[in-house]
Image 1 (spheres, rainbow, N blue to C red):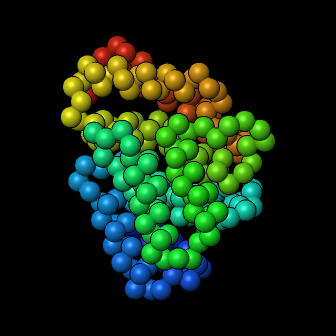
Image 2: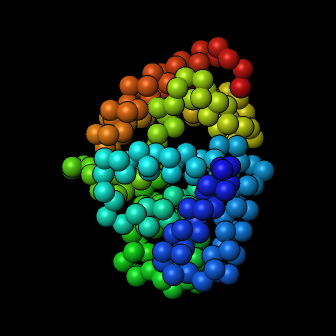
Length: 222
């Protein structure tokens, strides 16, 4: 099964579970596939969703989601609007989810607000403090797990992000990207849940330090 087929199956399953008519589900799938397939995207594609759902399966082996269907919808809509030149992608993604919710009429107001709030959490990737065992903590860790990829796969991710921001001059990109990555080290641990900390934390720190070093010393062309 290809990435697109796998992700589409997830979409069909969650909409069937919610009772969304098939024609409405299909029309919204065309929207999802079209937006995630925009030419500007190199990392924030359906492959990213596929990877998040793989991490979701890892989480399900250790954790019972309170609202798995809402987590699935948050995955689908959290990057549905992605324009690297714009600062409000999360807000607009939450608005797009609200359009879907308004048309399908299968979610309560509380559930709609919950998914929108989770989408907005991806702006800072911080869900507060506490036990860090709620659905939103795992959702955020699923999105962040790319940082813990094996070295070569992480380097591919870093190259894809640069491709999405190719409009930014190299010197400025090096500075801003390094600042963003360095900020992660001001709020350790990188991951919210113990499961993802155990699985990805050490490798993620190694990857971040390596990329920061390359950005700061100009050791690789961008």
